[in-house]
Image 1 (tube, rainbow, N blue to C red):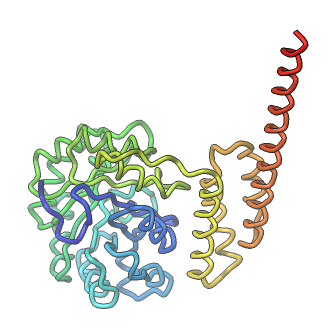
Image 2: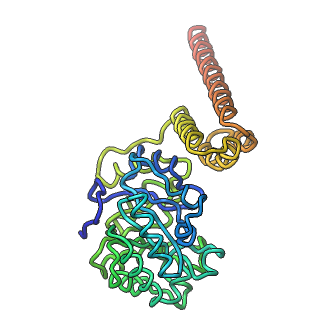
Image 3: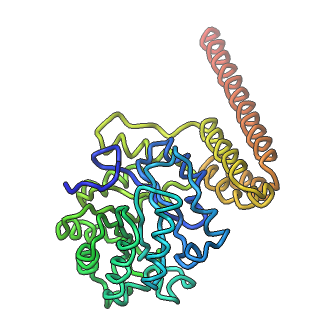
Length: 349
């Protein structure tokens, strides 16, 4: 098995994927506590970093308990990418720098950034070599299977990236034109593993811990990267670790633990952000994910999507738990009454 050029903790490490607006520092810290071995920042513009844009640089902040951490940058200008890599290395000192060749979002690809670069593999190699020239840190990249079905060829893309000098590569096996529709072709991850000498990180369609373990079995990937499967359930990393390592399964936490994790996440966001009201509004999406699947979750989400402060969240959770406790007590009392009635009928008979 190829080895990673930075500390990963386990033979088959679990990565938190870089996701804009989600994999911010508080969520990265929480996922690390729940078993993520490696986290990656949300993808950041090389031009924004190079120009020292305040909003962009603020997203580069991370704490020591987030390590092992990579900073992901995107752009199609090799010079700008090199300069960004140098600044990130000198000022923020992560364990590695990752290049985004996978983002399918229009505002990124219209300038050939993200998966837009995949239309020109010579440009991909120029960008990689420029980034490597600007840092002493390991450089990795994240790709899709191609720009569209006609250009779908993840093995060739991976080989070109390896030849340019990347030390590991993550594959989301969809094309850019697929966006997130259809299904991820895990067989393409397996083919890339066979073709490359560097670690291949599998990504795509991991919604549960079982999915993560199955991806590892079916593709023999060196690591598994979890994206949307972590939404509202950061414990997916502990659960996946147990399954991959053959340890006893880790159960899904009860609602009290789920709410405690959500509140801890909220407190970290409150400490991290400068605008408490804006932070609370932005956090509503996380709250919706944390309560997904709970009894009465639709009504609960409606309440949570109206909060303007983190204090309101605590009150809503407490009321929900109290209501649940009341129902449990009622059901228990009914069960006792039914049992007594049965005993009386039996005695009378």
